[in-house]
Image (tube, helix red, strand yellow):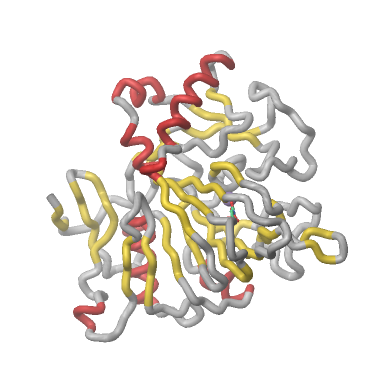
Length: 330
Ligand code: OGA
Ligand code: MN
């Protein structure tokens, strides 16, 4: 059953004065996003912004919007759809780095990008931009992750306060391969047997800071392959999304992960079980990139991975990461 509640939503995000038109939607007693009665194209009569769900486990495409000139009303639709669908796809965008940064900033302050694998700090003049690319110029890779597979992960969860969202914008995409898959970590939590939910209640997971999802050692870090002693940050294994209030499994990445307080063997076996639930095909949705695609996802309730592609083809993506206001909380 679906109904709308009157009054002020208890979600932190809802109290923001700049989004007065959204009404919280509750579904089976849980907060499930927002309803926009003032902004639907049907009501305004304009060929307006449209939210088209992928039909998969997560994600929606937003149509009829130019992110360079998006107004506050359309942005409110985008913001609500992002909470409802976890991931948004915008096609045929033509963004400069400045415009990508400007649109990203509407969601909050930006984190600086991690240091690229080459040791280079960032795109000249834009510390917010992380380049994901296999292209080599003058003997130096212009970005990170090469052309290999990137394993399931959540961005930068080795930080005390990981970015709440990432935005990936495709400047050049290969004809074959390099697809990115995303999964629904609310769904992952909900799919766990009750007994397993009880088993992990209150546990914390160490998120490794040694390797990135492509298996590359992070800059300035000594290689360690013992999960008990590798550098990283603990977060609750089950987190409550600060805005939707829904509970999600928060796994970060598999390599060097360690559940605090358990023996290594216990931690490994519990993690194997949790990962097998989280990476089921039914929870994932895959995207085949075209140049001009921008995908925005919520790092608090999704993970992603990437297929490898032919190293002789070119793939250039620019990413921004939006700072969260709070650390992950149970
Ligand atoms: C990222 C990432 C995968 C890809 O940018 O955070 O994991 O498809 N990218 O390039
Ligand atoms: Mn990533």
